[in-house]
Image 1 (cartoon, one colour):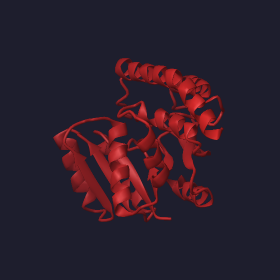
Image 2 (cartoon, rainbow, N blue to C red):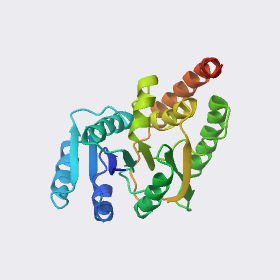
Image 3 (cartoon, one colour):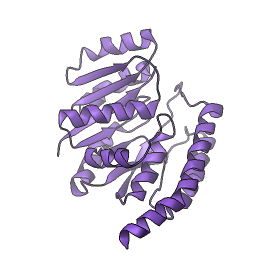
Image 4 (cartoon, helix red, strand yellow):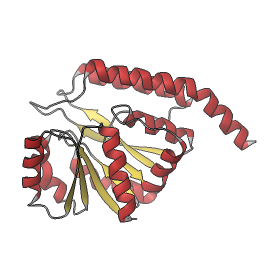
Length: 242
């Protein structure tokens, strides 16, 4: 098993630069996919990365969304021969020191998509906590299961081969819909999901790129698509079993 780190980045250079030493301490190859950040943000990130030769920066010319950045990073990882990709976000919310725990579980469950299940402190906005519960409830309807315990956490381990399997079979969104969509469609394909509890914080002065109007409309569209497609998927799987 060959692991690498993947960090999608968009104008979070200040937060990312602060925890780069902790990321580097994991002694893993790391790809940062910049999703069309402002020139100043990208320049400061490039300058900081000169101190970390094990990290690779791939700069996208235009902003195309977190999902597209992750898919681009996964294609790079596959080309480089990595078998598993550990994704963390660039805004400093994730507990990087938990990476060895995620790797240890992946080594015992190499085919599983492993996701963090957040444990929040008082910094977490109530709207985010309750929104996750709504997402999990809708995912139960889309999968007819309780396999998805958190559909939004961006701290994950993706087996490259199973990621490609999902991409080969289904469309995956390019923006905030990606995180949930790949979990639902992994369940549809019978890919196991495993979870690890991990702290998630909302640092003071944290910058969020979540647009409540645009991104909530994207999520509504996503779940409408998934709910409409779910019966056909269940019927197809029943026929395949027969």
